[in-house]
Image (cartoon, rainbow, N blue to C red; front, side, top):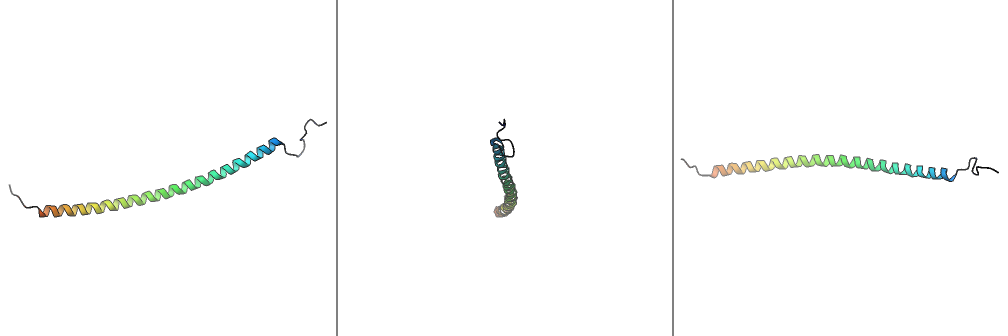
Length: 84
């Protein structure tokens, strides 16, 4: 009688379980790699969007200051001169 009933090339339940767990791990690592790549792409897009927003805000602020300066000049020109 053989003390090891699964002796030879037949895989044991433990070996099959180990192979199944390694396959699950490989799948999880693959999904994590894709998620990390997607996150990196989204971070790059966010960086681009933030740069565009800074540019837009700077241009908008420059326009606002230009209009305000013109309005201030018009107000100064329209005030009557008062001597003291």
